[in-house]
Image (cartoon, rainbow, N blue to C red):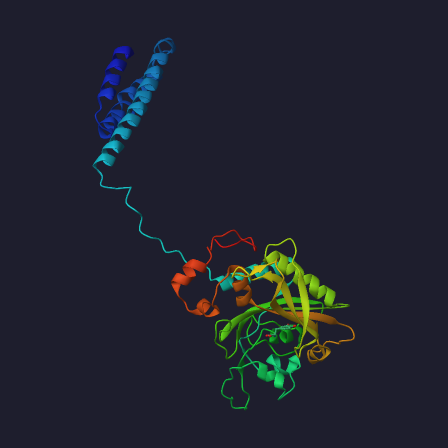
Length: 368
Ligand code: DAH
């Protein structure tokens, strides 16, 4: 009985012309009140002998019908997809509309690379305000009042306030050294601003700085990254090792040749500028080869007067400090010719010199 039934059902399934018709057949056979389901239910009312005789055939029928439906369904679905694709107007050969992805500004990229390297060397981050007072920007850093050294920073001053005090746009990140060392009872002007801590201190300070300057190598707003280490028995050797480590990693070299050149800063004694070996003969600056020197960073041993101004005993503690021009360092690594272009907000420049936000977080990753 089940064989002729099965033949009939399988023939109907094979003849189903679309997935809708197939579904109707499925309900008709295997649905709750379907004919195969009814046969399965009838097993319950049979005597054990009859169930033994008919059971396997009925179960086999259910299996064969279910398999046939699944097979036919796959065939019909593939055919229907083919038909839809053939009828559709989607032209996959058309070029996609351009996708404008944002780029990371080279200055921010370079900052991030520098921060990652100094973080590996054990430095933590400190920040200060862009609008400073004379004490933090000059006086505490050992620029005596009316001293000519103040004039070397072409400062943007604000009009005097009611108390006669003239605030200024910080001319360097060095005032944050003072904030990192000076422990006062006064609350910081903002929650993100460094409050002083007891030595040992090991901080870097990335940030914006301002001077009245504007040419191919100077912009009125620029970026510096300051470093400060205060500990016991610190000397110039520690400073040189730290900067050499930094340069090798930043310029992705095995090692770099550097030299100290004597210099003057009011807040360090002795003071130096550090130069790295370079070659400019091919029109671009190549770091780590050649016989020329590129001046990169101001540095020195923190002046005892600065330590004293910040409440630190110079007989107990010494330290070194350094200050990089971040934009300049970026130009050296990535070769932008004119510093002013960095802040002209020209998206074509950014598309060329910018970085992918999704580049590997390797601090030393190159142009993407
Ligand atoms: N503040 C200096 C400048 O703007 C850079 C600098 C030099 C920072 C020596 C330092 C330092 O901390 O020790 O030219």
